[in-house]
Image (tube, rainbow, N blue to C red; front, side, top):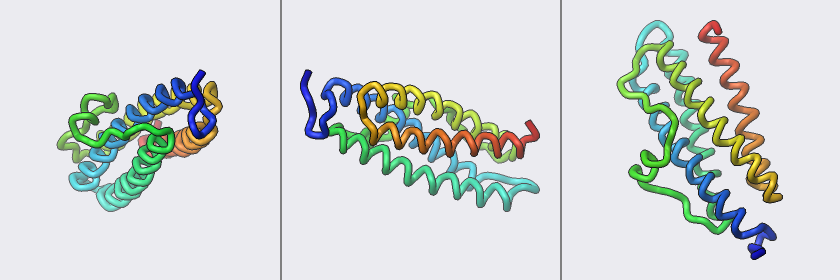
Length: 157
């Protein structure tokens, strides 16, 4: 077993880097979706949702940077091209969405997909004794679960 400068197994760290790059790609697509929703939302909920989507994309920018820096900390290289993001993302892409319910559903579905990826990374980081990645995923998960609950309440679900 080869150990990194962080005291982690190098093979396990490489696997985590790959999974984190997948999460990074998904967050980049999610971020672009939020920008589009922010710009294109229409209707009676415009003011409320316009501000909310900006709040979400600003938060996503921070998370994107955190993920990329975690990849670098694990001695990996973060994905950084739109081609890489599209090839590695599984969150739904929202195009020309201006309806409030459709927009909020896109965010809920995207967060649900992000949670699946984050939980997988959480399990792997736990097995690898990678507390840094583990703590990041735990924070992301608890925040996104609450956001899904709130958005579902807005939807009346």
